Length: 394
Image (tube, rainbow, N blue to C red):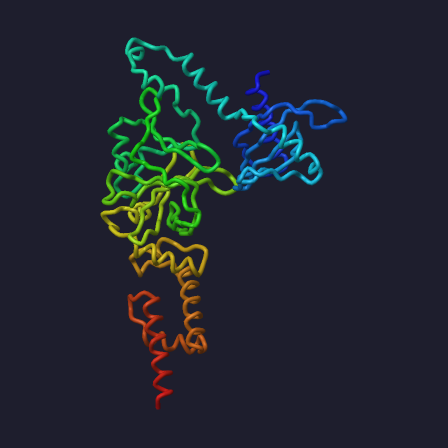
């Protein structure tokens, strides 16, 4: 049996074991080092593997001899031996020295390319391709995690090809997202003949800042929450007025590994908001018109005010709705809006060192119809403070 087949068999076995344990687990890659003698008593050689997997949304790497996990690998590639194998740490380090592991993912890519080239019937036109084009065809990324629906609108008026004109210029038939490693992705095009087409105007933001949170709106607008994403791609040329003010994010749903692609816009204060991008071959619901209108630049030239509203609300609670952060004050969702307002009023009363009931009376007198609650509270606080100061000066 070839090494690739052995590693595929191990991957299937580990995946099945996770299912039996009712564990949300996906084997991302297996790397083979060499056969080693781990048990000196038996003296039997066993294969040494590095298994990379995603468990409940968390990336883990484990060192495994045969069927036994012996150590965990940290982000800095440090080895933390399991307690019962601690005495073997030096021996393992010596055996791993100067060994380049062989990746299952890479072996499968090589096999796919071989098979693709073998099955390809080159006609006279294809034989005349330049060396550069042939090399590009060999390097076509064949594995992908998601395909963007090119027919559905992302914003109110624009599809992917209209947001990324390069796709139309290069006659891209499909747009796919593939996983490069545990944290990085690539968005690329596929041509009529299945050839790989790079999208050069989508520039990946290297090392996405994990502290930068995005206000994500779901497809119905019923949920707005903060989230951190795996990858961000800036649209460097296209319909945006300034480079980097719009683009796409790639994320994986916690626990399931289901891909999520979103279209983002950036405010003048360098804050982000996003809406879902419809994918092919998924059970994802179509993004509602109200959500697509929210992301449309002609309808909402600056998203700064909406992002600021969302930030204020999400400081007090985990999620809200699109109605509560849009420009229409008359469509707020009463339940979630009331919860937010109650918290603001309670905090303001505490700052004024008075009862909540007393502060509400002042707020009722100061509140103006159609005015944001934040402004009314601020004016009510000013009124309370002026009364306190006035009382002291009498």
